[in-house]
Each structure stands twice: as structure tokens, then as C-alpha cells.
Image 1 (cartoon, rainbow, N blue to C red):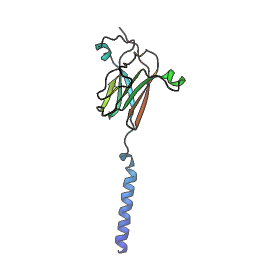
Image 2: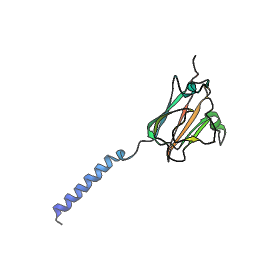
Image 3: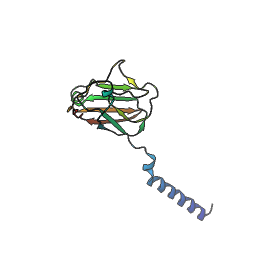
Image 4: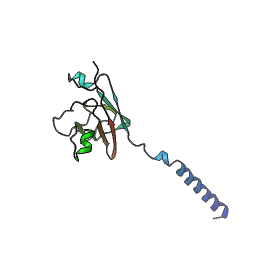
Amino acid sequence: MTKKSFFLTVFILLLAGLSVYLNRGRFQSEPLSVGSRSIMRGPALRRGIKDPAKPLVFLLNRRQRLTSVKVVPLAELQTNRYPQPVWELVSTSNSVPVKEFTYGANIRGMHPSVKGAVAAPLQPGVPYRVFVEAGSVKAEHDFTPVPRTP
């Protein structure tokens, strides 16, 4: 190997290494984030349930196959080691990839962790935290429901 081909090979390897270093962020996936928004109408109205709070929609930043969704009152989470969720869904197999879901509504491929359990009505002005898991990816979000207006 001549000096010229050796330095050319080293130069190409340095350029490749610099390219990988500068583009390292492109190879990482964006972390999962969840947010919430109150809506005017929702599944609670269709079932005839009179909730004191407006229905909530939880929004994810990308489509995910969820494995667990849990909503817990924030005060209970701060005082109890094992708080009781007001709504909890789990998936034992494949759930449908979703980008948004409504509090208390069914998500295809998921079921309540306790057979026959339904979501408890959210109380307006009480802070809650939602925990979302999609395999090993986890996210959480604090929210406070808004009272329903007539």
C-alpha cells in the first residue's frame, strides 16, 4: 500500500466518522410524550353517564401500540405507595397503534386490568396523572379536568 492510498483511506474514514458524529441525533427515536385536551362531546355522553367534568382526550406525539394506560389522582399518588387507579387498561397481546384516546373509552386490543371495571368519573379541579406505557417506552402527564358547562 502506497503512502497516497494509505492517507486517502484514513481521510475517507475520518470523513465517515465525522458524518456519523454529526448525524447521531437522526439515529435516535424521539421520546414518547403525552398531553391532554378537554372536548365538548365524548363517549360518556353517548352512554348516558353524567360526568361532572368535560370529556378528555389524551394525545401522543406518535402512533404507538400501548401496553398499559393508568390514571391516578395526584394527591393519592403523593401520599400512598400503591395508589388505586381510577382507570386502568392493559394489553396482553397486540393493541392497535393509536395517536389519541379518550378517557374511559375502550382502546382496541386493551382491556381493564380488573375484569368488569369501568372508569370512575373525573372530578373537576382535582389534579390527576396519566401513565402510558408502550413496551419499554414510558410517559406520564399531569392534568386537571375542567367542569362541564350546561
